[in-house]
Image 1 (cartoon, rainbow, N blue to C red):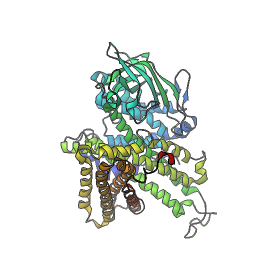
Image 2: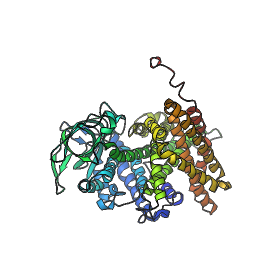
Image 3: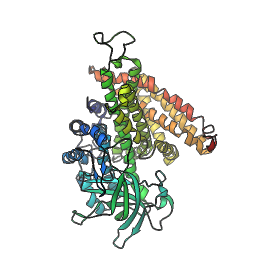
Image 4: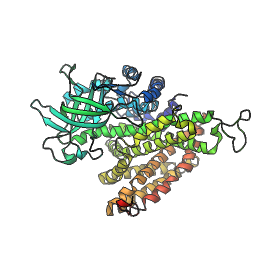
Length: 594
């Protein structure tokens, strides 16, 4: 069975849990009624299932091919699929109508993004990075740059990339060496090498717009001296036509563990012509728009790969005959029972289902707050901005970690079959692994959370989050039908609050304590977020059941919620206990002892 988009779940989340029709006063929502959004996502599902999913496996097998003339050929059928996407307008879904976009809310584009990333993670990266360039230029570019580049980035006629990493530095961008030399005409000559540039070269589009971090001659050392430049593959003439080829070339492709269909390029700039975006030495601020969007997209990607892997595991578990049920044959006319009858297989599938469905809600709920940053209500805007800063590292790291875990469980369900290339489990596992590394490795996300995000604005964001959960608990604690979910949420939130206060006290005294606790703290935070999602979903599902709705979807949702509370959420205790041991034992051995 090929990938199937979870349209029923999207309908439940957007209509019953989030209730997007409540937000008609927020820009983008007035013309995005629930009924219209359902129609959009139904069409999106047809595109993901019918156009993208069929080329995922062949793209993994063929990969991209680099030619000595610095061009790249993508897998068979990929260029045609991309052109279908452009012609259908999917690239423009949530972009500004002033530049040709459709102006749909981010919560809608994030739902569509889950479908395309599940259908093919590698394929979805091409339009995803292009939208990131659009967002960075939309936020920081000059009027001239916006007019020149945004319309064709929005339409997908041109592609986009971000160029940060260099051979000698990844996370520590203060070490970059790419230089920018100012020219008399206001442009700059960019010289340097960038590595691991996703979608750096391909045959989808006539032009690729690179956003490049570089250091202007004489700039301060470290991150305070980094500037951001737009460097097109082909220069753009005043009338919008393409001019001469810029000296920005793909010198080769990385040979990778997964996402073979995406061209991960080594980019070489030799006096390439570029233009400053924003202010000198403020490049990181400008690039963070794209980086944060990419982090949310990577969290979505990890979740989506896990979704596809889970679907494949369910299909295999229903078909594979092996052994008999412990409580008696369930397939008495056959030689054995399907392995889905075995409790340990159910454990893996239920773990996956609880994590995937909770993560799906977390992605859409977070995307809603991205939209609420444009609310006419200042208090709502402030809260939304705080949440986006606080939750981005949690969503990126927790969902990619759990997405890879689900892909690993899917391989285990497949058994030896999963370890072969005859089944899709191997590709999902390989593709998922990179999501924990790129766009800021998960350990870096954890350090960012405890080192920057918790303390921002005097801890306003985390206290607002705690307050929201307390409000939900107070409002729903007396409802006996959902009491187990509300109580579990309250208990987990208390653990997260305990861990937060421990960090405040012990991290200041010894920064290694914060570093040693960071990953466990982030995981505890992720569990709390999913506990909140499941409590909200249980409330919405129970309301349907109480109203007499006999759709089994709601009863199944409540069962999965109970499983999450009983079998997944207890991990919160272990993470709190581990983080509170501090750093002493972790840092005790000398480097020579390893």
